[in-house]
Length: 298
Ligand code: NDP
Image (cartoon, rainbow, N blue to C red; front, side, top):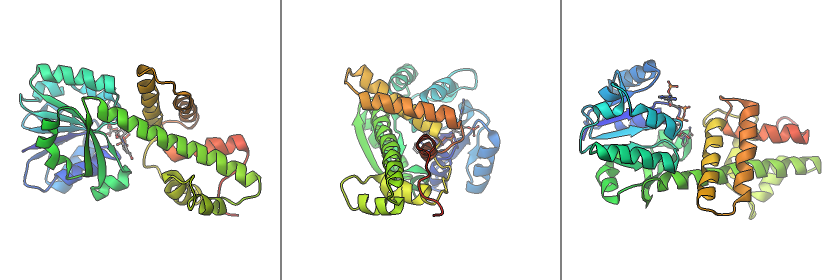
C-alpha cells in the first residue's frame, strides 16, 4: 500500500516519520513546503507539490491539520485532494476535528468512491515520537481493519469508537477532561499556596490520593513547578477541542454546565495568551487572577 501524509505540524511530523522506511512509497505535503522537503530529504519520502499530487498514487491518505475546517478546505480546487484521490482509496483524518465536519467530509468522499475514517490521536508529541499514540476511530470497522497496519506504525492502541464522527467526539471529551484537570488543579494549588501549603507538598499528597490526574502527576511537576512550560500542544487547539466537546453535549441535549464553563474559560485564556501559547500556560491565567505563582524558586 502506498501512503500520503498531509500536515506536518508538531504532532503530524513525528507521525509521518513512522510511515517512512517500510518499503511502501510515501508522499508528504505541507502548506509550508519547506517542512515537507526537509522531512522527505531525511526519510526517502517524496515531497508533493499539492494535495492532489500527494494523493494521486496513494491507497491511504492521512491528514493532520488544526481543525475539520482546514481538512474540508483541502478537498476542493484543481489541486485539492478530490482532484487526486482515486476510487477505493481511504482518507484517514487524524485531526482533532468535529463530528459534523467529519460527516460532511465523509459524504463528499463517498460520492467519489473514497472511504473516510476520523482517527484523532492522544499521547502528545512524545507519544507520536515513540509511536505509542492512542488512535480513536470513527467509521466503517471493515475499512479500519484494512488500514490498521498503517495506523499501527504510530499507534499502540487503536480503538473503533462508532460511526463517522465518533472518534472526534470522544477525542474532544477526553481533551475537555484534560482542560478541566489543568484548570482545577491550578485553582486548587493557588488556593493552597495562599493558605501556606507548598505546591510540591500538595502534589506529593494529591498524587497519592484520589484527586490525582495526568495534570497533577505529570504536567504540574514537569512543566509548572519547573516553570519550563514547553510548547508542545497549542492552547488554541485545546480551546478548539473543549468547544467541540461543549457542542457535542449541546447537540445531544445533555445538561453540561461544567463543559460549557470550561469552554468559556479556555476561550478567555486563548484570547489572553494568543496563538502560540502552550495549553499548560493557561495555569498562568489562574495564577494572575489569584495573585500568586505555583512553584518556581522558593
Ligand atoms: P500545529 O499547529 O503544530 O500544526 C498544524 C499543521 O496544519 C501544520 O502542518 C500547518 O502547516 C497545517 N495547517 C494549518 N493551517 C492550514 C491550512 N489552512 N491549510 C493547510 N494546512 C494548514 O498543530 P499540531 O500538529 O499540534 O496539531 C494538529 C492536530 O493534531 C490538531 O487537530 C491538534 O488538536 C491535534 N493534536 C495535537 C497534539 C499535540 O500534542 N500537538 C496531540 C493530539 C492531537 P504550516 O506548517 O504551513 O503552518
